[in-house]
View 1 (tube, rainbow, N blue to C red):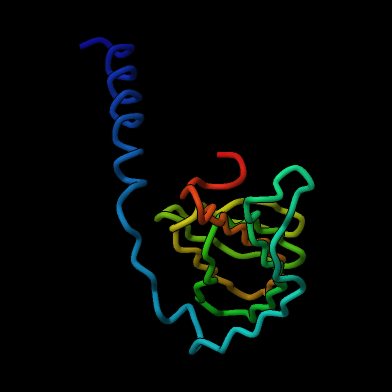
View 2 (cartoon, one colour; view 1 turned 135 degrees about the vertical axis):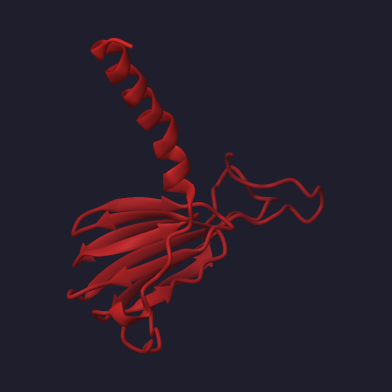
Length: 148
């Protein structure tokens, strides 16, 4: 096999092999984290959103919260619906659907409904603002409100 063919084969093996390796669940080293501290979010808003054009249908409910998470913690942030997260300060690793992503100040990202959202802090505390959008169902028809 030529040198060029060997390189192409190696690159193709890496491309095919990396996604499989990335899907493997990563084990968490418990020594990296202190015992969990209780989460005490500050609730800024919890109510139904309405529109002047949708009088008969209950609009989505929004819950706006501020979270302070200490360093060396691994905690799950509970949510009911589609969650929008803004990182106000600090750095951490998020685990959503088995994917680990590092985030820092001023990052925005979303967590789909039904997915666990785990925050892993290291030497830095983290401040997060979250908006949990919970889509209500129209009681009469069973249709979802809002856009899909």
